[in-house]
Image 1 (cartoon, rainbow, N blue to C red):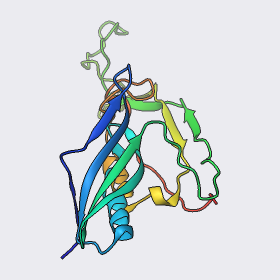
Image 2: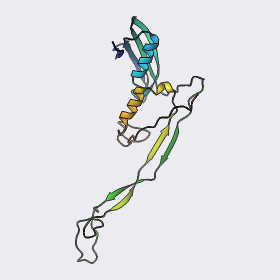
Image 3: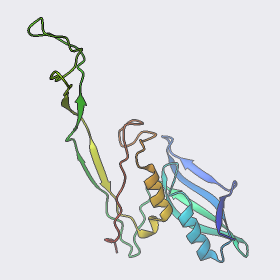
Image 4: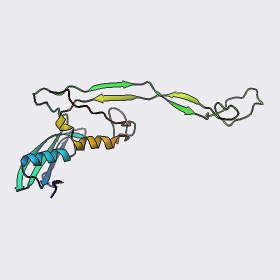
Length: 199
């Protein structure tokens, strides 16, 4: 039989701060059809969510061996957790960049015709740039904020499940307040992963 993981519905703990933000959580799971503790932890790491109520996964621990091939594990989540590299050095701080170069929007209709010269000129119904055959329109500069962040992660964090989750989020907007932006204001255009660089 294939290995599988199921959430346990007891012994779950979680905490919030005075602002209502989650700070810690311990979520128990059962891992089935694995041969030992190492296999149970590895399977759990590849299959539990990397975020729980917006707080990152910190570690996975074996709680007990239920039978020869069933284990109980606990995924521990902690806000503000900075995982360290195997050499004991902290991961580098994130790198941020942004630009406000703006974008353009092609407009073919004006909001209002203010005046016509001469007064007897034809009325084209607010069309912009009509040349007798086509409405050419005009490109107008619009405010656009683009920003990116570079995060340095240990390879153990970048699981297949993690990469699939990030991929599935591409094209989504934020469902809550995010870095000063209101819900729905930030469009996620995707991420780029590169291996190496950390000890």
